[in-house]
Image (cartoon, rainbow, N blue to C red; front, top):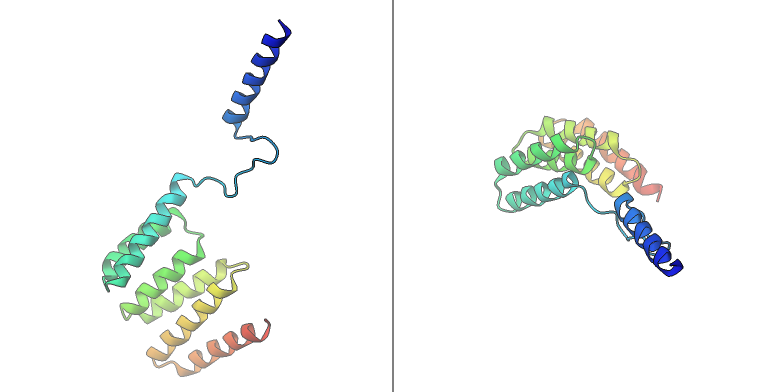
Length: 146
């Protein structure tokens, strides 16, 4: 009788752990499973990159607009939108998207550098050389802090 109770208790605990997402100590998954939204954004980002690889920036923009609508606080998505706008010769929008991306960054220095580099190029293409130089100085300050 005690053995049956112990087996039933072990089974009940296993089911409870499964249903609540708990795992036994030492068996924690390395990465949390992706939600459906995270997987969708990852796919949309890949589709956008593939479209950019073949210079289809309108298609890339369509994918990124969907991704941004799902995860509007993702700075990488805004940076990708900035790259698309830059390649569509919409330099002012590229700068705005870089600024938006940088406003969301906490500890992603490489992404911040990428945004500043793209902003400097966009300002240069718009003929706003003073602003391009100012952004380059910001970039140098980040590089010197390393």
